[in-house]
Image (cartoon, rainbow, N blue to C red; front, side, top):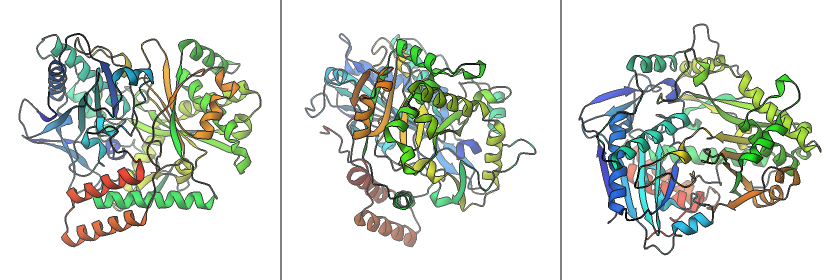
Length: 554
């Protein structure tokens, strides 16, 4: 079957606008965690059959959720008002590429043997649209199926302005259910639980702070007001402005590091697997004595990494007294009535946990673990909707040339931690029909050489046997030290691999010159240079950001 690019259209042609919420507006302008699923080839199933079932399943998904075919637009009266334009030509692009004869790529069995080390260097697996920034006119979804020797991969992602993590998991589940139906020869049945009145009420609340809501304090510990060009939540109009923003972000990161006399550290993703018994022991040991000491498995797991990384890095030797973990927090259960997991949109905020380094670096590993886990638990428990309302109120009162940004020290400082808990995603337990079945462990191919300096922790979706996989961005030295740390090994004996990584981001004179020329041309001609902007961005990304060249790309 030759490579192809298909356009999956809405079956019922229509023209309409779908308004997004203020909460959607403040979401990062990128594609949420890109999923990469893998399956072995099964029996006599042909590639054509597998591709057809996935494509028809996708067609039914967009019939269930038409917003997936929309393109992102900005309102004319209020720059913060975003909407999706769905017209008669609305579609989702579904790519297909046969890489089975590409000798530069591992086979399915080799990927499996090495614990599926699919990372950002495997850009050949990723849909082209997911490797571009989100701008005005950007689509809501991209997907690509690849054939490798002995198996298949499916990579897809959703625009963050449409879907938070919970919504992305719901959309993935809907696609899988429709593919099951398709492969069984069943006719279309809607799997989406949707009530228009309920959905509209939720969207109104996510754009409306409660009466009497305050604004964020000027010295808020999490957020600060910045020029719109520096805000990660701002919607850019051209490739030039995106590149200008990226270079500016990197300049601020380098200035922050220089002010602290920090040496740049190259990080790679380190992957561990935690078995159910290890998780049970970890949770038991993380629970402090007394009625207020209960913690969740996620609190315990992230707390383990937090406490051991702090001990290994000896952060207190830098003069710091506390350490923080920045994390997304779902607001769905905080509303009255609660927002169901089936709601498609952004209902997530940010929270952070703090703990003294004296507690985290305690020689008693159990005590340090309990302090870290309890700090995480308290951060979740004490967060309230009043913080969201204050954020919403502040955003809506800002002039158009200003935006919001997480404080630099929370993401630039290499001794801070940013975590993302995807335990509740259904990815590793979904059945994709008789042609495919349940996939191998999901991978999220993100660059470890992030612009931000903080350590990143991503807890992957739960596996069918109850195990959890975790990737952490660490330097080679810190990764080795953690693998040899006795307090850590007590719960994490199963180290799987270091994922292949690209080159760290560097702002060069050539990149600066390219950005300036692009901006000058755009401003002189008063139009966005989409094509050449994309070329500059792709070249910059391939040469200076991740060094990815599409491993094995034929």
